[in-house]
Image (cartoon, rainbow, N blue to C red; front, side, top):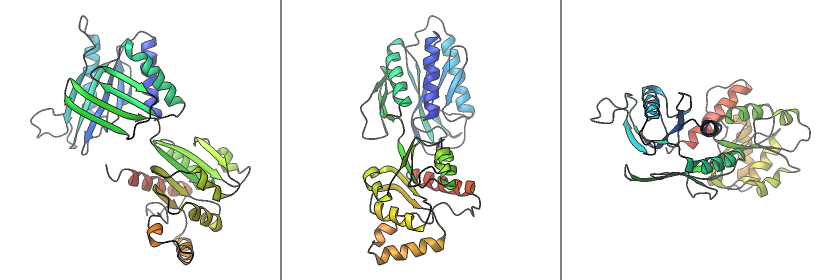
Length: 325
């Protein structure tokens, strides 16, 4: 999200300096395409650029195309273009020059004066960490504060008639419960990704809580049972439990167990997890609930240090998030 905001700010600044700027946006992607749906970049008339459509020879080709179009005099820059790119040498047409397989559909559009108010509103929304609806069509750019039901929508009738909609702002929320050293390391890694990060602890004046400037929201709770009133369910909600000890971990799991999350993980050794799960079973937590808890948390990469543990957890979260893509 930070990179997206940087690119929109680059577009805004170019327009404020009366420099024409072209938007290059991935409307759709399939297979192993390096440019995923929602990837974007911008190129201005003096050759400056921001963002990425996936890199490689294809991106270089489109950057040069944008530069050439912006140089043309006496030609209307209002015309938008949709180009399909196939990442295979065996493709009969629309070859991208890459061989990674898959394909992507790219929108090229020179920003117009009529788009500026939408861009300003979009930037304001992103800076406030709010959600909204960004829209592209043959008519150009639009933005509203309404929150769409889905992250992406794309319908293509033909190159002159299409509609693309995207939920702007953070699409996923990560709740980290416990603010120790692993939590600090995990927060740092996850802050580079598309997650709005919430941090919780029940300890006042904890140094690693105070030092954590990577999260978006920090909350001291009197009792972890209060989390039932704070954390909502949802496929875009990810929860990591890593409190100071065995007993507080147990309270958190009992408080949130049975909720529907995109991911629910518990930090601990195999011995600790086995002991906890035996207690849960004895207290009546069903196998259906317990099997949905990732525990021990993290991919099995023989992590040793705090930073390695954080990497293994981040990798597992990303794996779960992207498993159906």
